[in-house]
Image (tube, rainbow, N blue to C red; front, side):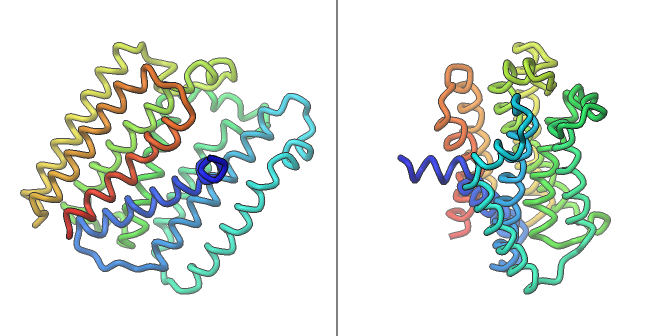
Length: 277
């Protein structure tokens, strides 16, 4: 259990989830698989999340001693350093489309702005819907455009459909986490879709998102030579996601959110891999 907690709390598992979704993208669109590129995505996710948790810990530290707060998170700092080294090692083996990465970094930076311990920027904590959307969009960029390495303006119809499919999937997961964090976010003065919208309306929004997700799955049959097995895999992942959303109203455990909810990404990628086989 200690090992599992370390893997989950230091974002190692979710980094594998990012790789699983990136692999799914390549399989759906019949792109070649580049191990260094998947490695870059793994280490970038690992570095990004550990940096986010460290900034969050510093920002909401009531003692005001951020050095002491950071010292208590030595393991996260160690994982962050290893992740940066991994990024550099993979980066040297690749020729990347730079502005895809730049756009992704900008989105992630904007998402982290409300956490910065700078009073002049605290107005961004009222962003609400934008906060939830930014994270889902960042995940979509990381797991679609980064593995494909195609320019945004040069995306094919099939790639655009997969992009929206992934965005809707990630938006659902982000809302599940926002719903869990709603009470704490209100105390901290942070807003999200879950804090701005009543629970009943939030369920309606989730239903509409999942219906649109299902529609994009079906469209892949018509705009790309996607096999029926791949479409069924995507629909099955959406079905399990809807069940997890319903369960989230009664679940509060750490393991449920950081293994089951995050694990939906890994499950989706695994189902696509099985469909390919």
